[in-house]
Image (cartoon, rainbow, N blue to C red; front, top):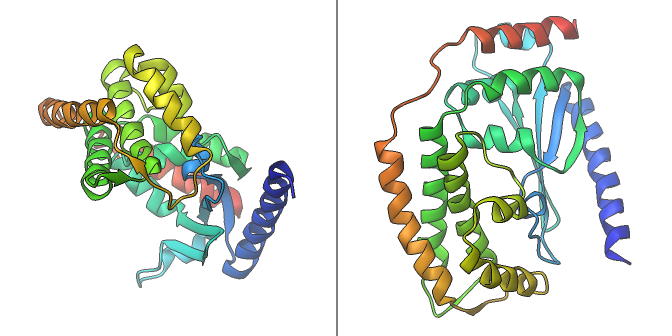
Length: 262
């Protein structure tokens, strides 16, 4: 089976799974996207599909006294990883300027969406915080560097799990807005010219490697990573707290969505 045919069949299967979820859970899916390496533009031949969706229940669900689950974990296997967040959770996370919310909002791989989501997304964008998101990307880069880039042989995929968040930090530093999801956009916009040949070579090698394959460390990238981990920790520490503490716009859009569904 050709790769394009496989992708098409998987997209059809994902659509079926989303319909199953809506029916069984009695929810409305507002937005469903790819969130892993496939959305970042550097998937391996055997990468799984990381499907993420945002959903809403009927209004009565939110009027119960007991606490209710605000996420759905539907499927996890070698091919599919399907997880959803309730709109209630998403808006609360947006208030904290959670970077994951911005990434799901901007994923270039969209499996399903709605007009309602477009209105929600416009409100969420106003809660972007440079400090919060830079801390997120710095922490992601540091965690992956410590856990996966220490041996003589390393997973080339993990280099991108460090480089992408570091370039996201640089994007935030220079442009003061949420970074793009695609690695190629970050690379084109903010990666230093002298590193581009090494990164391009790494991309080409990774496209031929399986998830578990490893290669020798790349000194130029190791030096870049070490320097920028230190730099962006210091920069994130020095930034003022710029989060928007107001709940009004988030409460309003939440109520509008619930009323529209009735």
